[in-house]
Image 1 (cartoon, helix red, strand yellow):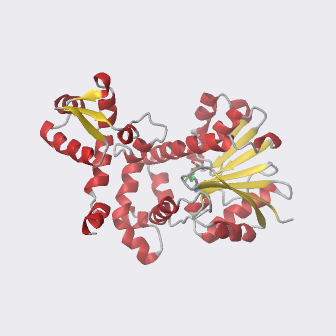
Image 2 (cartoon, rainbow, N blue to C red):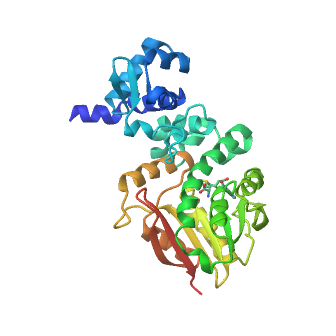
Length: 339
Ligand SMILES: C[S@@+](CC[C@H](N)C(=O)[O-])C[C@H]1O[C@@H](n2cnc3c(N)ncnc32)[C@H](O)[C@@H]1O
């Protein structure tokens, strides 16, 4: 029992993974001859101390990430492969301490007790302003935040593009859509669709390059505007992906109401967020962990389907369908006007 508690609470283990990724170890091992590299060579290639590195790699071997295939020959296990920068799960990005946003986000976690006492984001008690204020004040942090969101958006955008709802949709507005990566993925798959991304001006400024790279510039535009202001009206679908969970109930209902008003009687609002304990595809551990992350980072929260339904009602919307987007707890919640 005590051992289990120690494994759950000891910070050296999660930081060993971060350290390995930050030093680029998984990629370096994979690039070795036949995917095997000795510790001495790994130390040379990563600019680290051989003895200290050996001690780190032993712990990582204990965790089942690396294996010693011959004396002084390390190889990635299947689990370790998922820490390579090229792995589709993008885990490496979320651990890499070279990245300004990841570093800041991790620095907030030790102040979680502040959030539990106050119900507000711990980000403010660590950095003296909320996340959005920090991003506005620091272009490097803001670019890094947008890059991190694009990693999520790339994965989710591919899943959303494949759900088959789009053939009857002509236009979509991605509200709080970051630099447009998710919208670009959907437009690329559905050549008839036109799209608009609405986000804060500095973030939307990065969208043109992403639309260009995806070959969808002729059907996509960016609007730099707060989603607490009226939104471009008359589109068929308003998308809110990983937006509502950033906000407490009052603000979340206001964003949803703005979407409902812009959508009018016939438009739809699609929300993508974690849904806590969705039956059939429940991911309670991921949801509860993400819920704490939302609390500490921005004072937001993950919600159950019932809580989303109530939020929709406040905004004049009816929840008509909930579709799981995979085992990570993300779901698509489709709302339409209550008339
Ligand atoms: C968690 S990110 C999600 C981004 C994107 N939808 C995705 O799934 O990757 C939240 C987004 O909300 C944007 N945002 C925050 N406050 C905003 C505001 N007042 N008006 C418009 N966008 C805002 C942020 O810039 C950020 O892009």
